[in-house]
Amino acid sequence: QVQLVESGGGTVQAGGSLRLSCTASGYTVSRNYMGWFRRAPGKEREGVAVMYVGGGGTLCADSLKGRFTISQDNAKNTMYLQMDSLKPEDTAMYYCAAVSTASLRYGHSWCDPPRFGFWGQGTQVTVSS
Image (tube, rainbow, N blue to C red):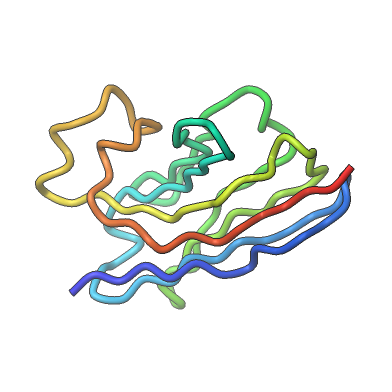
């Protein structure tokens, strides 16, 4: 049974930093595509960053470049999202996700939520101005 558990969310002031963690069980982080997504109040869920097999990663929006970094620790079977220079518009519930065999056929890109079949419960990030 695949389980993804996020942690590290919280409330910070604008300009602050947080590091989110996603620890997987029943699933090998290093051998699969995984990603971070977020859903802000009143908005659709959107892609934040994707980690490719082999360790490379990409951000899903230009507004995140230079501020967010995705990484993983294979020994800990954990994926991270380092978020710096946070802005109030980054306030959202952040979710960790992993692809499944069934979900691979869906979605238009790796930043598209339907491509991911396993989801964590989410961790709240609130950035105050």
